[in-house]
Image (cartoon, rainbow, N blue to C red; front, side):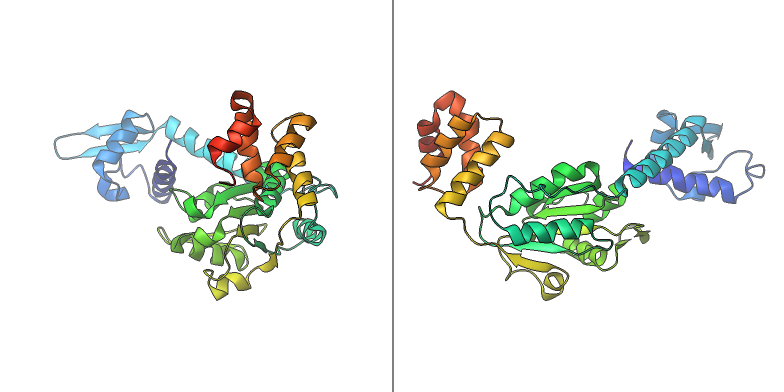
Length: 303
């Protein structure tokens, strides 16, 4: 069922609670609840409404048993999601063991994840500096407590609806510099005390456990001053060759399930061609069909 239909059923349920249904023996019409007749007809066909009266000039409805059950089921699901998402996050000291270097950033992120109140962190710098690896590791241990978003394609529904529906503890945003204006406005509101205002309906959401925002951005100059001020901004520096080899081997073995020998070969071949760990992942995924050398050639890495 669509989220909008659940909202309509809740509004209809409130109408029935606030009015004496004995006086509305013929049921309520679309004018009472201000819902378009075609929408009510669809909800009736799906079994969520009962048709208690019909004539040429009037069609009367009431919530059906199925409609009330759907409302109750949705409320129970939302309660369970909220309860699970706001349990304390268990963080181990080896959370970022697959990332080489950046020890001060590892320590900062672990402290922010365990802090009683939110501290938002933005990792900045050119591509291929492990920014996404940090977000991946946090998503892996956080599970349903976290939402992963890419700024260039946040969601069709928008940031308001995504967060309102799932109520996460942690919001992970890659490519923050590509986020659209509407979602940036929502983000500013959420980061300032965890309050979410949905402009479409005027509905406000006060998160009981304000979320933490951990983001990555290739560019800082395109971010507004008010957005940057809400983050602790940390700039990452490029890997040296030794660190790059270690990072690639770790990622390919732990995330792509490659054996150490093949992971080492890919890392060695790419060490003078690329600083991007994603290139190594692409080569690894094609290596069984093409071999390492041909995969690098066809992908155009270093060319």
